[in-house]
Image (cartoon, rainbow, N blue to C red; front, side, top):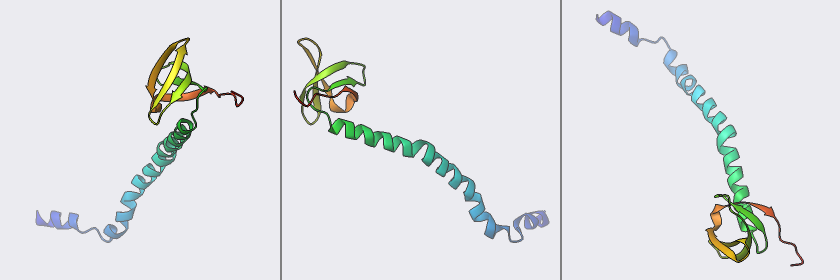
Length: 107
């Protein structure tokens, strides 16, 4: 019985090269996840942050809940949107999904 355990324990030099080879598939999988999932998500978040920073009165926007409206007021955290004549709602600035139309520079 001890001969079997001793025979299994002697790798014959495989332990040295097997260490880095065992982690190679994990490194490759992480690289694939980084380039296909993490990096594009970071890029999209950066673009969304730039859109939120560029908001101004008169922009037509859509919220993440699907409300379309015209920006009538802005603070650091809250956007006031007019969704129909004389109907205004306040939404969190982060919930603005995108800009539909820009305010005209003459207005």
